[in-house]
Image (tube, rainbow, N blue to C red; front, side, top):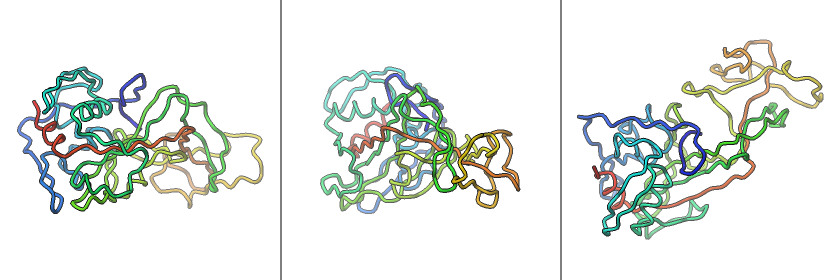
Amino acid sequence: MVGNLGGSGTAEARVVPAQSGTPAVTQCTEGCPCLAFQRYNDPFGADYEITNCAGLSARLRNIWGNLEIGQVFTYQTDSGKTVSVEFTVRGLQQLARADGALIDRGDDYSSDAPDSACDILFVLWPLSASAWGGQYVDKNGTVVYRQDPIENSDFHIVAGRIDRDGKMPNEVYSTNGGRPLEGPAPIARWAFTGNIPYTTSPENSPVFLRTDAFTGLPDTLVPFQAADIPSNAIDESTGQQVEAGVEYFQVMLYNDRPTTEAFIVKADFMRAFSSSP
């Protein structure tokens, strides 16, 4: 999970200037007006290889060019308000809310929204400082050892376009920091609510640690055998691929305070936002 939600916590913020001469791309959902840049159902014009989850979902990299994550900038809304905000996910929320273009959904990202046809649904999973971190689990998911929580906050976010009937997107893409694009898949697939595999960046390889790194383990644990592990998996102790004949535990991420925030941003606002200099 990589990005800057706004506030005190930052894990990694990667914003790359927009490439001059890159042709504008459009995304059209059946029965909805097209949106420049917002290819939510087909992300291959989004430069996802050089952006994080926020860049993919909000298209921050494409639409604001040289701004750096966290930089304060002034924005003139369509209603004539001048708002100074940070260039973050929270900043996008603040701008949309100031213009009356944001609808909070609590944790609901599945119920229909007929009054929001063709708008953009964002689903955000904040990671609270000192409430998430790594742990080792056996094949049955039993926790073998839990690391101390990470002191920084972080988050993961995805987005998709609501269809013309107000039905929520059920297949969206995701990217985790500098890792490759994944999807499409239902939104719930990307939820960070705990016990998800930790992977390397940028390879996105799952990580395992050999059982002999631990002592005093109960006999009830069920280690992973090499045959149980994906071929691209990495041995944490060596940085190399896992070895045949060695037993392992998997590195997972836990989240002690799982929170889901769903919100809708009006398509007209995103169209104006994405065309601003």
